[in-house]
Picture (cartoon, rainbow, N blue to C red):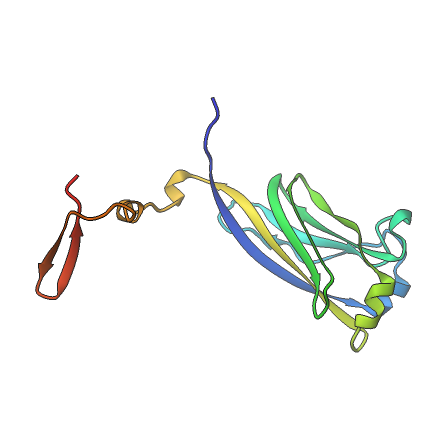
Length: 165
């Protein structure tokens, strides 16, 4: 028998600056990481971005590689974008530890975007967190809004919509 789980979507975002010097001085496999960020509504789930200015591996040479890393298995939607440009990619997937793009953007397409030797990359995440049913507030009255009322009780300037059954 299958069960139904309550899920809360926790949204977060982080920006990091990539320097033009990083494209030339880093070697393939050199990783830079953002600080770990705590996911609200969880005990110890955290996430961060790992990025490789020179590429993750030989296949990604000439590209920036970018990944979302989480400290425990969960479903994550990550949207990576270069601020001030149309460069954007996203994925939604059950992530066990790290997931992303080996070839997010080529150095060739990034170079014209640098201003004062820097570009900003934003990662927006939606993390799907299982929560207890008690966490989700339920208002019986709100769940009945689609049912027409039987009458309206009016006392002075206060109105109360009433349902008999």
